Length: 79
Image (cartoon, rainbow, N blue to C red; front, top):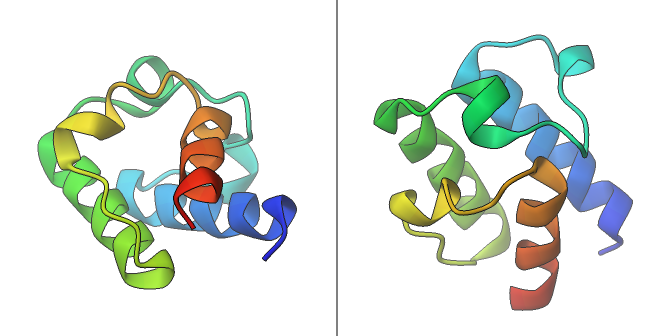
């Protein structure tokens, strides 16, 4: 799978988890600063990624990625 496909999917998952419009999220969106730190939102994002890509991302780890792009790079590395 190509990076741009993974990016589009993770943006969609983040949009659902954080209840933000897709067009407000991009590769440079800062996860903690712009999306938030609520654990339920992170659980939803993590679960969506794990279900789609079979990649384990502990909820606490989501906050360690600065941007959506960093999260995508991690998923790509783990696939």
